[in-house]
Length: 258
Image (cartoon, rainbow, N blue to C red; front, side, top):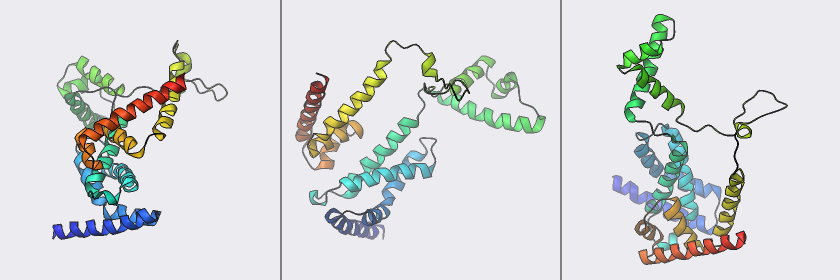
């Protein structure tokens, strides 16, 4: 039964893709998304127990990857859409999790102790009508006072503080943390933005296959072998395209700097 359903999905997807590539429109794309949404659910379930994000958030992010795959899929290459789409869906979720992950890696034991402290503090406030002391929390967790304070400090500093955060409440004179931090290399931020802009322009000058190879290897974190399978080309061709693309980018950005 399951194999029949999978076969029907492939046939219907192929038919819709043929129509979509002749005349792309939102209605057809949404039909393809709905038909292949099971791919997103499968990836979301895989990552659900490995992060703190909700299932709905993972579905939304994975759907963006599915849409990107639909817009780039070529029926004429003969590859299965599911094999083509999974790296896009997985890559979108991975990038989302990386962006939201903590800069400071906190030991799992500390994370568990911190979670236990939350439950204890909530119950203690209800039972005693006051906030527990640091020592009482440490005793409940059966750790030293210093270790509990280290746990609290690590959790509070798990994310970097934005330099754009306002440090005063004066609407007429807003001061950000960046304004108070001396930085002799302040131009580096501006240069980084300029570099990204030049890189985007240089990528736009590449041939489609070369650009796809660079994207799979460097953005989707695929191996050269996996990239070759997705694009229907040899590993040798992938290697050549990588070298060619990097040379073109280096030359293009070098000219702009000159």
